[in-house]
Length: 290
Image (tube, rainbow, N blue to C red):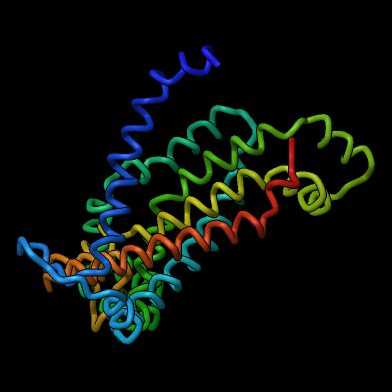
């Protein structure tokens, strides 16, 4: 017992930081979700679950939720598949592969605001590099107003999100691949396993824990892509790129409806928790071990 008490001073700073930076804001947001506070007035009224009812009937919130789910699905699928394929290609230790890992990781160190401005110029329908490249290749029919087209804009931003973070996921997959005992790979090859069979029966099952981290982290990233969306479109055109985080921002700082914004934040937290939990259950990481 005394030994455990001696450990308290070591964990206390972490517990305090967690309480101040996470628990307190979460409890405060939950409290304000039951009020009509505007963010400025010293007084406010308790309105019960009225904010939750208003959120349910809010068309813009419904659009932001659907946009966020589209954004999340696109980013998770593209980012996971592409980063896994790249990791498989550069898994072996060599100077070229080390250089490629560093090259893939470069976009990750850029700020999302910088990435947003860069890709806004690339997507420009008149002078953007993407449309000019397509024209040079004789694919003028493919040119688009990439972030001005309401049906295309959310996927254009999702592609930028995936591009910016693929390198980070490659590093995680490479770490997972290098943790696989080489004896298992060699034994499977001696038994006559094909490349596809080797991946499906040996590599992927042992890579599941790394994949679970990649998928859950990518999901959280896609729901927190406020700075990228805000920089590139601000939620437009016609709310076609409005996601939950931009909805919360607009509700709180543009419409001064902090109570409603807090309600959306609580819903946001619950949604991410449920999706992440289901992803871990689906990948069944508890049944996989190295």
